[in-house]
Length: 301
Image (cartoon, rainbow, N blue to C red):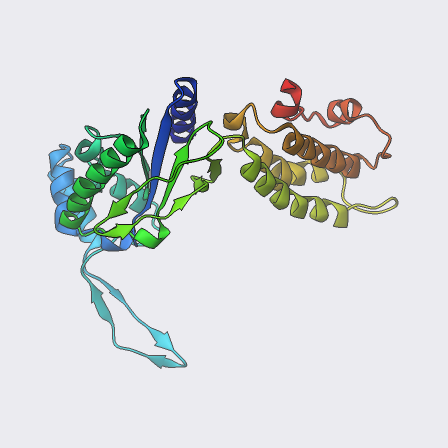
């Protein structure tokens, strides 16, 4: 949420100044699998972590083996000399330590946001050419840093988006090692779909599509003379429907009114299913009965 709130705030500040904000959203190829243990050990020592603990961690992630089984055939064990264990609770923390100085490489050229292996570079300017030049320079320095740490960027999975209030969105020229980064009108960053106008329509449509599946689950568990208890239905609604409404959507306020009305209709449909109420039941009464607050966007209009 912190990273998303920072970038959405900077986009709106650029809109207020009538500037372009060009963002490059990077995908680091197999980030956890390419961590170099000797470099990780050096980073931990630089952060003044006790040497005994450093040795313990390095021994835990080193000298690991994998066994491949295929069609009842088992291959001989193979040694893994780099990478962090997938699924380990310690791996995200170790990766954050491994990349703690990444932002120092590019912060003189542009802004950077990093959450685990999701990285976003962006720069706002009155000129689209200046923003593209800044980001290209930042990508060059970032590429050198990644090479020294055994990491690489998957260019086909990267996206560049130009955020602007202008009717015609100009294309930015972003490239990495001779490969052109695809220019898109929207991008999904940390679970939130950011479009070039920041009106939230693509994200709201995505939320509506995911919420409809949860509404079908509620409907399948409800009936006039049978079905789950309303208390259990409300817990299920919070998990499979309301959670989609609450994640990051407030950052797109104010959004498109028509898309917001659709979210409000899904909320009222879900609450009617939970209570077994008629279609003519007022939404305010349903919200009070289920102790469910209204959608924040619809309430603003």
